[in-house]
Amino acid sequence: MKNLKYIILSLGLILTIGCEDILEPSLNGQAALEDLISTEDGIITTITGAYEPLMSIYDSNLDFVVTMASDDGWTWRKETEADLYILDADASYIESIWSQSYTGITRANTVLSNIERVEDFSSTTMENAIKGQAKFLRALYYFNLARLMGGVPLIVEEIETREDAEQPRASISDVYTQIKTDLNDAIDLLPTVYTGETGMEVGRATSYAASALKAIVHLELEEYDEANELTAELLDKGNLLSDYAANFNGTQENGDQVFFETQFGGSISSTTTSKSDNYAPSDYNGLASPLPTDDNFNGEGGGLSSGDGFVQLFESGDLRKDVIIKTYGLANFIDASQPDGSLYFVNKYYNTSDSEGKSTWNFPLIRYAEILLVRAEILNELGYEADGEAFDLLNMTRTNAGLTALSSIDLPDQATFRTALRKEKRIELAFEAKRYFDLNRWGILQETIQNQMDYLNLTFPGEKLITHPLTGKDYFLFPIPSSEFVNNASLGEQNSGY
Image 1 (cartoon, helix red, strand yellow):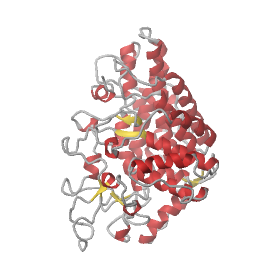
Image 2 (image 1 turned 120 degrees about the vertical axis):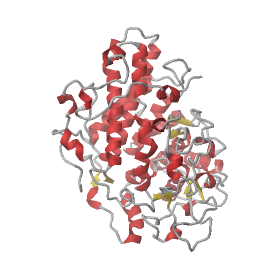
Image 3 (image 1 turned 180 degrees about the vertical axis):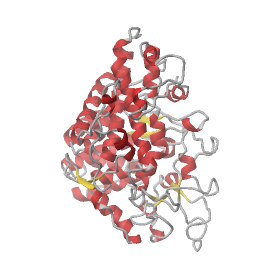
Image 4 (image 1 turned 60 degrees about the horizontal axis):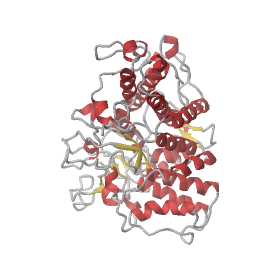
């Protein structure tokens, strides 16, 4: 059965983004763009190209920013900007996330603006699947931008003139309205499964992926009733793997334990992930970063290495611990007074089967386990029920990890359940680019990170917080890349504090 990852690797379509390049998209191939997008094969190539920026975003750029900016990861190296919340508007990681996201958005818009020109569709199913993928991907890219930077230019048509590209920042509310509209359409248009033929390769976004993403969007906005309905429909659409490591080690890719993955593969750096290389233990490349936070360092060693340490989270018998973090018995180069095997590394993506630095393992963006915990959170926020469905969902991931189930004796009210749920989600989804976004939407990012900053006598930059217009919570925003204000005179104001 064909897999999308191998189709992405052979793409000749590489479009670039920015106010200059976006007006004159170019092809590394023989066919002109207008010819390419007038046939079924061409439009399939174009929509496949809209997936490609996910590799860059989820390989290291987004991971670096949100892992360091959470209480899960820290660095002993010099790249402390995200860890210390001193990223500025010139930060390369922020600029890369922005540019790659708009690359994906531009490619999706190209599909949607030209799909009616295609006269040789083999079926309505194929046409709808392509439309649905474009809408799903556009929503995903905008969702990341909105969560990181707030209101951004809302471009939903193909760029043909400079005026089309030079759009002002839309409001956060308007961006989310577009995201939800796109996901509603994607749910209706996308198939639930792919059959493997050309244009229907396994790994493309499904209707279930769109429903799962929309549930997460509603959760972000505290729209619990809408998220409740969507997650209820997804409960019988997936399964948990008894082997937690198989979610990440390439053995069960695109299975029913996951609703959507970033597809990696091939043998060149641009089509593989460097997660194994980045997180690798010191006998691999000596540069491992980030490391899991560890209270045993008491703030020593480099960045914000302490404060509700990740290493200390695990209950005895949790089968996930050795998958997520390991010491490998190595020397502790942070504190030489400590014995070998006292320094933890992130083990979740450590790959010794592929070439060094070129892991082909897919990266899960939305796992079934996440939807279980999303639904558990929703039900608790709608109203605590002793030993109700929310307990069943929470306990599914716990017992799958070898832990005992929790009951209303352990968690007698909404607040204690909320605390347990947040801890469970932190562990189950560790180092999957989730924790920062959760802390931010819960409105507790500042107080959580300040616990770490206290060790270094630093103060969280509260001037970079806004009041989220849809939830009323304190909400941190990273900067819009400074280069965009040069490229786009209509952009408007920079985020507060930059």
